[in-house]
Image 1 (spheres, rainbow, N blue to C red):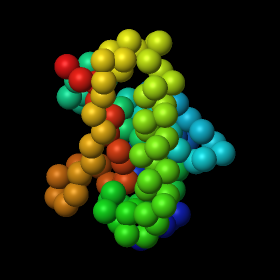
Image 2 (cartoon, helix red, strand yellow; image 1 turned 180 degrees about the horizontal axis):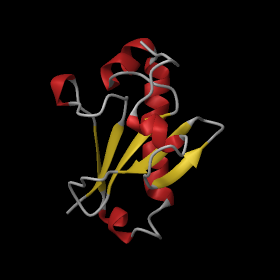
Image 3 (tube, one colour; image 1 turned 45 degrees about the vertical axis):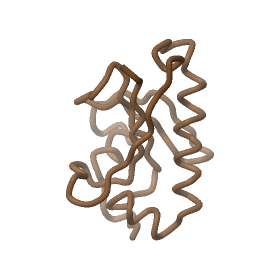
Image 4 (tube, rainbow, N blue to C red; image 1 turned 90 degrees about the vertical axis):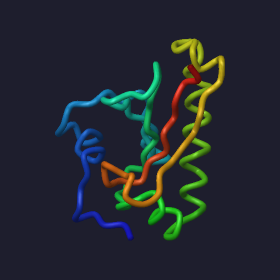
Length: 115
């Protein structure tokens, strides 16, 4: 389920209402990459859609094509930033969570450098 009435921390970062580092933003595709404030590696970014879905699973159920586009965006942006972030040239991991493990409500795809 998506809603415009509900906002998340990521929505607030994208709107400039909360601090956060936006690594990449595509207003046409309505996706962004935000740096994780609690990184699990040298690079830990989250690809998020501008629209709010409470969970990644909710996004997949509501619009699987949009979710696939989000994953493609994350991969393309990782490759696009390899020169600026050489660690990405050694490989990266894409992951997403289901269920109670999602600590911030908003559909997201994690992108982590290989350590």
